[in-house]
Image 1 (cartoon, rainbow, N blue to C red):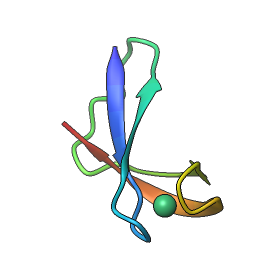
Image 2 (image 1 turned 180 degrees about the vertical axis):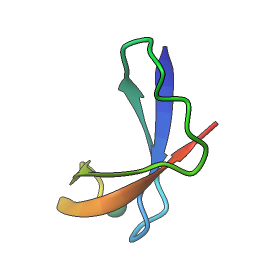
Image 3 (image 1 turned 135 degrees about the vertical axis):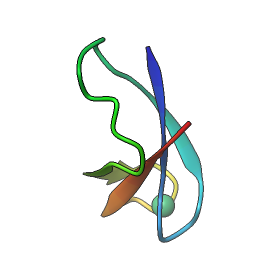
Length: 47
Ligand SMILES: [Zn+2]
């Protein structure tokens, strides 16, 4: 299952591999490193 995480700083969307599970929350925010602006930002999950 692939999740698309949008960076709030540069608005790039990064695909991440995610294990199948109960985490099917719309608009879920995950703090992770952005490879585009090279900062740790609160990414928002998109579909
Ligand atoms: Zn970014």
